[in-house]
Length: 282
Ligand code: DGL
Image (cartoon, rainbow, N blue to C red; front, side, top):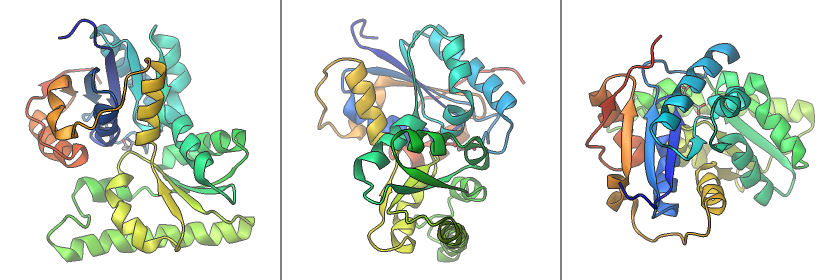
């Protein structure tokens, strides 16, 4: 370990946060990372605030005790439901992805109406609604509870079996139709679609063909990485491909390391070779 490199802990309920880690690895060439996926207790998106807060606090403390000097809560659900609880339980700075996601929408939305797709728990918290309102925007928050399991099963356009991708496409279409009907009723005209769940970037191409023409599709990964970079000091962005960088990351998972390796590689976009199993209790 390089003693002068900033040590960043990245937390997610499982694998999806690796989409955020990917952006962090590219944007922060001198940093070292410890990624914790609480894969034994996912999904967080269908659980209560109390349960998510308990799990997230335990995970954040573990990352802090492993030397993290800064924490990124890559999980939208944990950021929406447990950010205050996490901040109260550790001594290091903590960044969640709701604020950075809302920042990316605020930077591009002209109509100031934003469609947010997220887990059930994130939508129920209205964290995105509040963050968008603070930035002078209105958010239409649409829960898409079937998408996480479909993505984890690999039923995306990357699946060689086109029928499987077609199922996910149809589910996504139904959610978008429901959101469009709700937007009409509420008098909203979203021009920006914010992916408010770590998994949804894997559906970006599908969304691109289903969303209304001209709608901008955003996730929080790049904005989060730039914010961390700003907060940790002026380190220039790298042009190093992420594939050259996983040596700077330690991976911890609370469930099967084999499953983390195979599923995680899809989210990170490169092989994950070493994963350590840790136990966080029940
Ligand atoms: N990581 C979660 C999120 O971004 C999705 C997966 C889960 O429900 O645990 O909301």
